[in-house]
Every structure is written in structure tokens, then in C-alpha cells.
Length: 331
Image 1 (cartoon, rainbow, N blue to C red):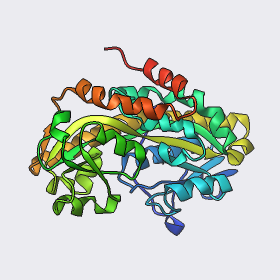
Image 2: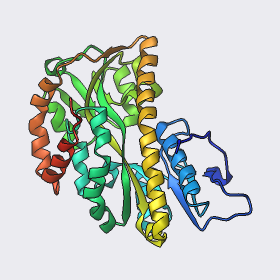
Image 3: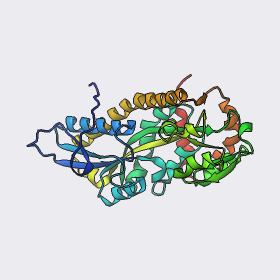
Image 4: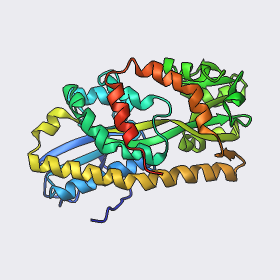
């Protein structure tokens, strides 16, 4: 089947309802899917494709309504809504779920993934490994997709760990991230995300890490003209369904919805990769410098002990990291 993509269609209450049903045909099962991104984001496009395919594969019996732009709340509120039953589906950053499924913290460790392809390849095996843990916490896990990789964004060129030493770095308010950048001699400064731009502009910090898409959309290139493609940590999108809603579906519809989600995740990958490449190209056109010729092993040698330190505190980290390592693409 050829996967199709569709432009947003406005509907009541700000939701975007996608279906192949005739107006007179009502769905037997309706799900509200919450997203924290705009309609032009690759994650939204993937959800849109999922909704269309689910309706198609169930002959209109399943209707998935999309709520972008955090209309149903932020990611934490969405996760809580799924557990309470007010929201049925979402694509959530894995770290948001760690309070219920601590095993997902392995995805936030540095240098777990060697490439974009590696981050994509863990979808099926990691879904199988973590499925029961999600079920026990009130979620049905459909799969994973990468949201993006964190890279270094700086005022001056940073290509080696030595270049970062002594510099002030904005980090997220998380012990792992503080320890990670202390390991290369940087001086971490926890700062909320909305304050990054001003902190760089006023010299409170010298560099930070973020994704290619945010480098463009947040206009970070204006205050930090260097982007070093370290890709040391990948933010993973977690496709989850409220377990009671899932359990109410007949088995054939469960299979159809799971198949629709798998096809949508596959279709998402090239769109995400192209969007990241286009974002960096646009910042280059506006004067940024993209640094991609780096010795990633030198960074991993410095940061590796931090990964070992924090992985010791994560349930099942050893077996999960083995699963992830086994999916490394050949070559």
C-alpha cells in the first residue's frame, strides 16, 4: 500500500479529525490523540497518516482525532490524561514517561545510538522488550520514532572536548546532563528552555545542546552561529495508547491499528531526516556554520563513564542496552 499524507483539516474545538467514513457513518471507537507540535511538524504528519490508515484499515470503525499544539495539555498532562482515560493516544517524549516506566531512561543516556539509522532500528525490538512494563502502568506501547538528536550549539566553534572545557553551558535541569558536561570540563548552568536565547545573547552561557529543527525555528543561529553535529543524545517519541481503550478493541481492530501505526512510523523517518537537513541548510543560508567533521569517539571516551554511572540506577538497563547495541546497522 502506498502511504499518503494529508493537509490539516480544521474541526470543532480545535481538533483535526481524519476519517474515510461518510458523514452518516459513525465510528465504533473514537480516540483523541494529543500532540505538542504544530501541524507542519513531521511528528504531526506521522500522526495524521496514522489516523487516516487506521480509519481505512478498520473500514471507518476507528476514528482518531488529532489535537496538536498542546491543546489537551503538555506532555506530562497528556500522559496523566491517558492514565485517567480522558485522552486515548499520544506520541510522547520517552523521558516524560520515566516516572511510571523508569526503564525508558536508557534512551536518555549519551552515545546509546551511533546514527539516525540506529535510532530508527530499535523500534520493534525495544517495543517488544518494554511492552509489559508499559501495560503494567496503564499504557499500550505501539512503538518508537526519533524526535531528533541533541547537538552542540555555540558562539564559537566547538569540535573537541577540549574546546568545551572552561566554557559555560546551558543544560536542562537534570543531574545526568549536569554530570555529562562536567565530564568534559564545561561549567553547566541549568536554565529553563524559554530563557536559552536571552542567556546566549547576554553571555550568561557560551553554548548549549538542542536539535536541528529547534536551531532554526527558535532562531538560535542568530545568537549561536556554530552547530556541531555531535548527536550525543536522541529524544525518542513514544507511541502510546490508553490500555482500557486498547483492551476494548476487538483483536482484529487491534491488529489493524497496530499495522497502521507501524506504517506511519516507517513513513515518518524520511520526512524527519529531510526536515532536519532542510533546517540546517536554512540556517547555513542565514550565516551559520555546521561542523560535522568531528572525532565522536573522543567525546564518548570522556562522557562514557557518566553513561555507566547513571545506567547502574536504571531498571533492566543492561539487557535493554544490549538490545539497542544489537540493532546497530552494519557498516
